[in-house]
Image (cartoon, rainbow, N blue to C red; front, top):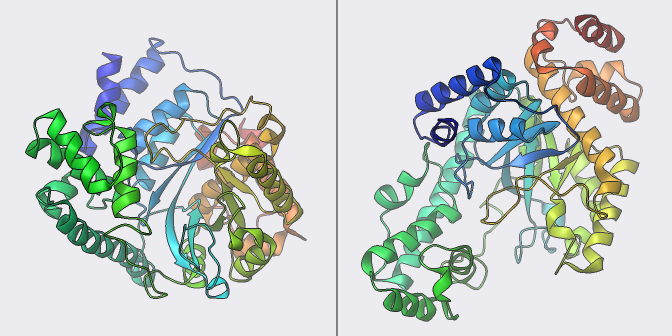
Amino acid sequence: MIEELEQKLDSFDSAERKEALLALCEKVQSGEIVLPEPGTDVNLHCHTFFSYNSYGYSPSKFAWLARKRGLAVAGVVDFDVLDALEEFLEAAKMLGLKGCAGFETRVFVPEFSDRVINSPGEPGISYHMGVGFPSAKLQGQLKKFLLNLRRLAQQRNRDLMGRVNKHLTPVELDYERDVLVLTPSGNPTERHICLAYTRKAREIFDDDNALQQFWSEKLGVEVESSALPEGRDLLNAIRAKTMKRGGVGYVVPDKGSFPLMADTNRFVLAAGGIPTVTWLDGTSAGEKAIEELLEVSKATGAAAINVIPDRNYGTGHGEEKLANLYSVVELAQELYLPIVVGTEMNSPGQKFVDDFDTKELSPLVSVFLKGAHIFYAHSVLQQQCGLGYTSEWAEKNFEGVAEKNEFFETLGSSLQPQNEDKLDGLSEEVTAQEILDKITHSM
């Protein structure tokens, strides 16, 4: 019964997801399911099925699994949309999970137009985030900006698919019939298109030998039978050989293909989020100039940085990337930039949560946990009363970023989800100490 309910959490039907989550919560209340006390592990960068999650996780499913695993703080991030926000924050509150929500997109950074940053082979283009949005119900120009991100992404997808169709004939996709059905809200990504191609090829080639030969010839690599019909290696090969730089469907983006970082930062700030720079591994020309990149980013409002630890240490990554990881964490601390960490889960095989007890990551746990508590506190304060990390209130009430970070970390570590409503409707006149006292008295 529990397993069936957990499976229903990934239904494309929101009512079915809600019903399943309520049923699971009832089992927790009755003692049939015992959830652990939150520990120190965090994952603030999980994509849901509203962009692409390789395990098919909905916002409710991720919230449930995060609570089952005893995560201290959890957060969702989706490409170009905030579709997961309301559901995830509601689910987190029901489960007693500290949570936040945001989005990821790609932006153009004019100052780095001749340097690759973290979008391989694409000078000036950078992945970028907004973290801790209080609501997805935007109006006016904010709504227009977000809708335009979705429109641009979907037009890129359709154009890309058209070019790849010509190369993979007779395996050709229809966007509405084959791709859109793979997502609950009309926001498929390149990874959805790859999955659709594998399924279309399976329909056309029902013989494994013929299917293996087709993919090997079209992709120009030897496709192993173990990768059929839609294994990780095949999906990655399709994306690399047809959609990324050098692939038949790839077109070099120009500066009009993505919004300016400055404009995106203004949108995130106006919508109540925290503009966040993303860092890959420190090996590109742009990331070797990380101090310059952060200076440029902060000038237009960026106030945090995202890292994905798992891709920078362990077997196959070498010592350079691990050293770079430690260097960027040290720099972030010097600049008082809270750090977002997570595993993404938008590619097969990625972990649910980082191995924070490894010798490589254990020295960084306190830093990552501090950032997570800051983002959680911001998310709640911004949602309840508009007094978040990037608000005018925060600007006026702290002498510097270090003091502000200390307050938001303290609030985030002490505040419990069941007490979030205690912060509802606080006025601009409230002091930081009064907020902490209010939480202390409600514990």
